[in-house]
Image (cartoon, rainbow, N blue to C red):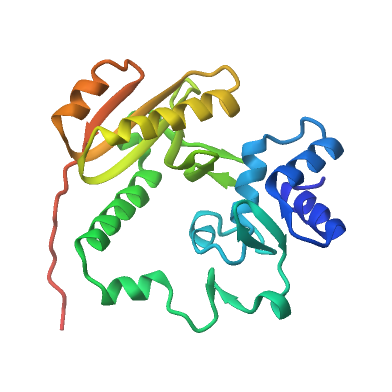
Length: 237
């Protein structure tokens, strides 16, 4: 059975040029009508790009055979043409992890906390809500789920099989996050949910008053506060 990755590679091989995501999807839908959702094809284009660093953590199992030219334009990766890449970075450049160790800023610390929170919750969603589990389809994870309007931190299913869009914020969440989450919810409802209910959950250390008032008027959107507990242990030397 043909996979999405194989279908994409087939289109790019035949085209032998830079092709837009829209053209790839159109051709695949002509050859394999109603076989895959557009969102799944978009996610594979994102996850199969050799020069996309997040693809290596978000979609590690996908083959890396595409070169992303930006603005949703792709072609088959050719090392002689595009150079050699290491986990999304040009060969010889430092990956983000090494830079983060050298540049200690508040933004980096905040990102690290948010990433750790995302890692923990992706494995322990039942701690957030009983019966909650990470969404998965066609080998793609609901962690950092790619959409036309941005990447969802965690896309989950509740015990009834309905969708839950989870947005994580390290520190104080402001009212700006409301529009972001509502956009994600609308996208999932329109393109993924297939009639299932969709609701949102904002998880943060704290929330400003304007955010609380805004969410109070949106029944499908809730707030959850996380608490950090530190534990220490002796190390033998």
